[in-house]
Length: 516
Ligand SMILES: NC(=O)C1=CN([C@@H]2O[C@H](COP(=O)(O)OP(=O)(O)OC[C@H]3O[C@@H](n4cnc5c(N)ncnc54)[C@H](OP(=O)(O)O)[C@@H]3O)[C@@H](O)[C@H]2O)C=CC1
Ligand SMILES: O=C1O[C@H](COP(=O)(O)O)[C@@H](O)[C@H](O)[C@H]1O
Image (cartoon, rainbow, N blue to C red):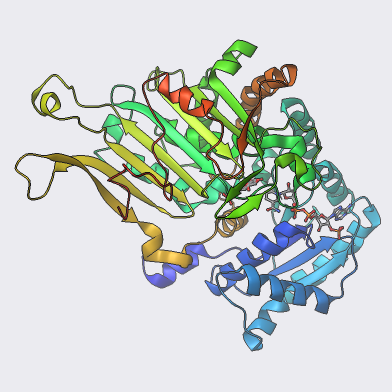
């Protein structure tokens, strides 16, 4: 393929993008920068328009100024105040509208038709709901009543997480949306699926002869997925105190990464085939039915006062908009099992938390050790081989192997073969939201979650949440800036394993860590 053909294949079809919630945090930090990056990369030509929708008043000039500021602050490309910027900004308009006001949607339709004529857009409409989920149903109904879905092109609905609070509320939400949109028109965002290295899991697994044959319970001892954050709840205390780490990160990002690691190779690289395989993994998760099973396999914690990098940090219960008696978990870790032929008996350890010492997302696949009753194993203590996939913020993979210590006669030491992708492409790697917006506009649904995936993930998580709700007392506390409750280490120790240190974690005896 020539470069021009390649760019043509990546080009987004002409469409109007509606950003509902255009004055909000997500639009400012992620969506406007993503649209600008697509434009700068030639993936978005001149046949597009963006209409920002929210209640507060904004003139067109003020709205365009908001976008300029958002790009300057959050985009990997900077806008310059020149003709190029002015051409881009002309594609943006604002509509002040309460989403409960159906007449406003009729006006919005008139505004849209004008823009479609102006930019030669063939009636394709993408509705991005950067709104609280309680509003998804009303927007869908009013889009229909206001005639917004009657244009000639396609309609697509992109919705943000959280998709419900539990299975029941997710079903209700889904039912409302499905009265208006077909499943194939709905794009449920899980922004972790837009991350470079999460998408790379498939390639690492299915394009390498030395991984796939070993990818099973005969050769893999355990899998560890860590998603640690240094931040607390910031301005989102109200939402977070209702949700907690299990719903905020577990039901979606953590389980999605697990499915990418555990799924069977799809028969074809088509969205539905890939999603079929992912949902099978979710259905194979061993459910924890009783409070005892939950207690044995899942740990929850909440941060108390602590410090990090010389700075004092408040307790979770002291955070803005958080109940001072809150029992919401800011951390959870679990031992999960995928009960199928490939994975029977292999524990998947997952952990995530706020106010941990480093910001990192990493997946460690620990291979079974060589038999220690023969040859080298008899003589040396061999470290297990590891495949580490670094998702965030560093991107890359490395493999830890045993090798002869250079210069020594017969000493063996662990050695890391490191591919640091971020060192090579640096800040040019597209942001998750950029990829996902681009995919949704091209009708590429692989990296969005299908309803049955969402439902299966909720039914698994609900049982844990129910057990916790009945037993409020079993929460552990950890100082902000520490690695979470100590019980988390016990979870692995009981199986003869330990957490492998993640990138940035200080460990004196880790000779194979990069930079050591
Ligand atoms: N921010 C983030 O990093 C992330 C956010 N999300 C999800 O994305 C969604 C949006 O989040 P975020 O941007 O942070 O939220 P904000 O509270 O910052 O923004 C909400 C937006 O909704 C608009 N809005 C609220 N009520 C109405 C209404 N009745 N009619 C029209 N517009 C309305 C607000 O504008 P106005 O007040 O002017 O009407 C504002 O633009 C949420 O579901 C959140 O959970 C998911 C992942 C990350
Ligand atoms: O969805 C969410 O993700 C962020 C973490 O995302 P990352 O890309 O920065 O790793 C998390 O902070 C937030 O609580 C959650 O809602």
